[in-house]
Every structure is written in C-alpha cells, then in structure tokens.
Image 1 (tube, helix red, strand yellow):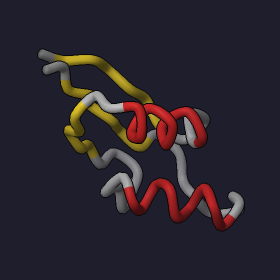
Image 2 (cartoon, one colour; image 1 turned 90 degrees about the horizontal axis):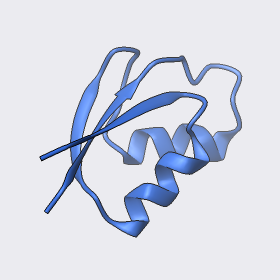
Image 3 (cartoon, helix red, strand yellow; image 1 turned 90 degrees about the vertical axis):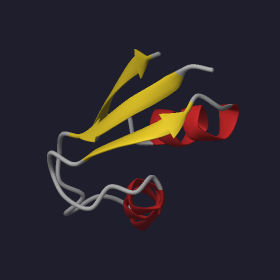
Length: 60
C-alpha cells in the first residue's frame, strides 16, 4: 500500500483553530517536521484541508 510523506512547511500561527488541530492530529509539531502516513481517504481529506501549510509526496 502507498504511503504519504507529509511535511509541515508553514507555521500554524494566525490560522484557524480547526487547521491547527488538523496539523497536530497529523502528528506535526513544528516547521520542517515529517511524518509518514498510510494513503487513506481520511488522511487525504485532512491534508487537503491544510494543503497551504504542508507538502505531500507519495512514496512506496
């Protein structure tokens, strides 16, 4: 199954509380943090909601 490499590229300061919670629930704490997640619809939806704060790559 494919995995997603998610990296936080911008700060959550000044963003909506929902966006801050979404970034935290993805497991990101600070700029530059990287997490690996399974490619599932739930994760894709979370990433789409905060796509202005993170970058995403598909990895095998």
